[in-house]
Image 1 (cartoon, rainbow, N blue to C red):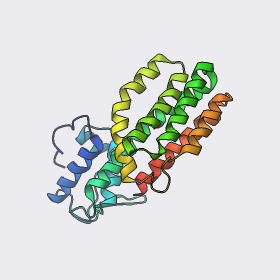
Image 2: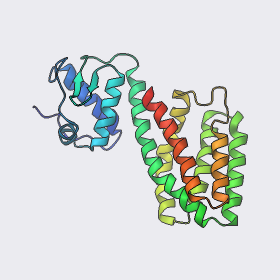
Image 3: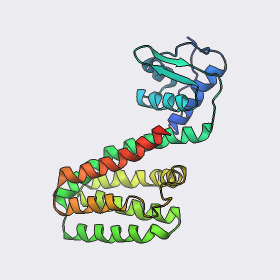
Length: 231
């Protein structure tokens, strides 16, 4: 098999991987009806991880270019994408961001429930109120209020390294969340999208329920990620 070219740049990897594979399909490297190499081979050729390849293939499947057959592999079904290709790639990229959110924030919520102090609880209450009040505001304002609440949860975990890590992630998260709200129309009919779950999260932290706090946040994030992949 010929090489897929130079290793991909760091970001956005899913977008780049999907486009690179699509280009090779269009060029005839893998004809319609043929089987693609396995995830390990594609990952090595692209210079990315298997999870990136997996999300890229999901985006290509959504675009109608490939289809997975249980136990047989992934097969080419078309040499050109169909539908809204850019939107499908955006969904795949957002799903990746949500994987990272889950890794960081669920553990932070568990720690917050164990370590939170009175000042932390007061900050969480203020952030929850601000998020509710931002329900009637523009998407960007609402996203900022949502991130502020999640930041307060991370801060309550009492781990400065974790807080620094999340702070580094926030600019990327904000950019993607603004796109997400519009892409999935999350606030249509529900301007304060997810308020009940966030209130439940704050209460779980307040009562020191580490497993409950982690579960509430994990369920919320996974629900959104599932909607992205289903699109």
